Length: 327
Image (cartoon, rainbow, N blue to C red; front, side, top):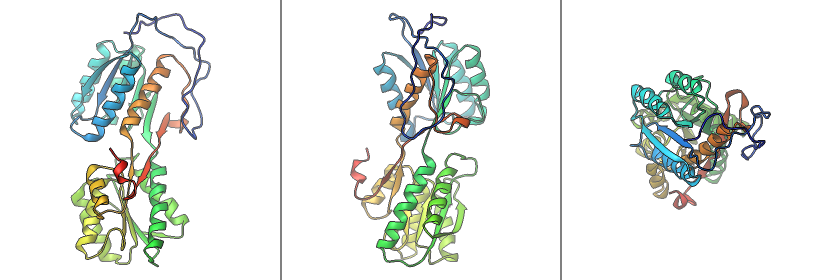
């Protein structure tokens, strides 16, 4: 474990992330561990049963071990009490930095309070910060992803020779504040292109609700030329609703999801979904380790959104042309 109270060295640096603005206190100094010390990083993860968090854990672990750090993992198992007690246990075990992907962001308060009391920096990976005083939070460029979806949809609708300027948007649950940026980015970009969002309804992130919402949209707006869904379970379900209505989710109504889940990639390859926007949880995990090192060394961190201490990770559009590249 890194020993506290080491003599500060005059080092400084910032993370090179494209198109970022704003930073923390640039006058901070670097506390570098002696060569015989080993940094211990604790990672408390949302739930290891999900592929997204498996990839996030793999990226976090690989980046930490590449630096010669000791890596300790805690699985919250989608349980608030387990999140709080397990993350606090990592702090009690003497970690030098805590990285956490919180099941319940609003319950981060006591975790971060304990970490701050022991001088342990906290880097949040995705989900939300709950208004707590974390050092930094890594999230996907959700608004940018919504724009990618809109730009693609506009081009595909034109390729389909459709004249309707009406599209729809299916949102995640209201508490998913970061995910809401996807639909907001989509709406802003698609309206700038001259289209109208005639329906914006929540599917609460669930496939069955996404299917029902899409059926309702089609009943009231049969001329919609495209639909953007906040996540892939709803995106694939919406595409299925389109097919069940006798239409094609690529050439009749352009259906686009978000996440690049395996079911979406399979659907895209089979012509059952037009596109999705890929997050990169592995890269997000790697990025949290870079930020953790800066926090340990008390170096300045460059933020995408300084007010909320957010650092954005890039996203990418996935279509049939590049679906085979998704691992």
